[in-house]
Length: 213
Image (cartoon, rainbow, N blue to C red; front, top):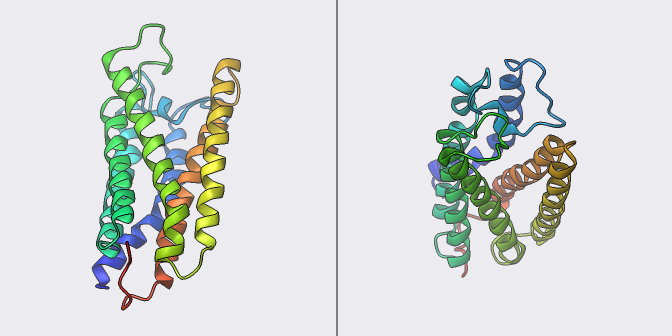
């Protein structure tokens, strides 16, 4: 495999680091911001002190990283249809990340009458969750075919179950009014760590052996 393909894949290793550092740095400009209770989207919400730059620190760079990682994945496993679908889903996730930044949520992110931007933001957020969760579900099966060890398949299954479980906890926390930020971070953190482990797992693949469908 060409070095450029591997470098594209290794960008996946940067995704969780960029997310954690970016959100933390951005939150420093938001007095009283609570990582436990507040959604990450509130950093870029209309009226937030960090609104002018939050998307440029978080949503847009992460979108680029996901799409470049997806390109590397597609180039490496181009002979596998399911792997190509997973790459397309990861690229869609990156595009949706752009959308959540370009269309910020309203002040507080939970208005009684959401604006069009808020509705698009919510839809893009749903696409982000579904695309990356579905991609991880595909690798439950792809791992046995494309990677030298089936362990990543079990890891993908664990991440899938944890992602679904934390979504339920997010919904409950939203109703209760406490803990939403924590569960959202756990939910997205699981997904970005999954992407990074996939990027790392690829280094054990023999580049002289073609991928199978």
